[in-house]
Image (cartoon, rainbow, N blue to C red):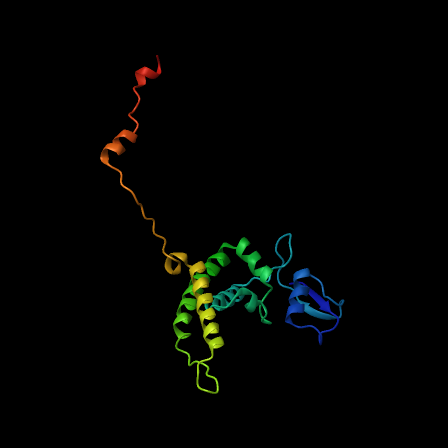
Length: 185
């Protein structure tokens, strides 16, 4: 395991530590040590661990967006997550399963939104802005679920044929097989 130093540990946080590890050097110099993860052969060190991947996918499965997860101190940058999806079949499979679960969470949240007690004004009337907000929340979750699992939550599309076609018309449209002896003449 290689070790690198950072000059100002009071100003450094976990993200800056990860940056130092990612680039392989400390940001401020070489005064305080930062543990370096094992380097890949011929490349930058990876921050990927199965524990981190599981934690990220768990949050995705709960319905959180990658961007909001990446704002947490413990998480890597969203570009790194997308890089892992492209490069690691293991992580891509975990991510796909988490997204399927996320669709279910979004669909289930739709049921709870109309059950909330409405906001009322001074006269006891329901606030129309609150109603529109709830409608927007439901529509956003319906749209998200339909995009994540279109077969289950997407709009059903039906193909309807209008008009008639008789058996005689079908027979007239079929092409009779050519006689091979006529092709060689």
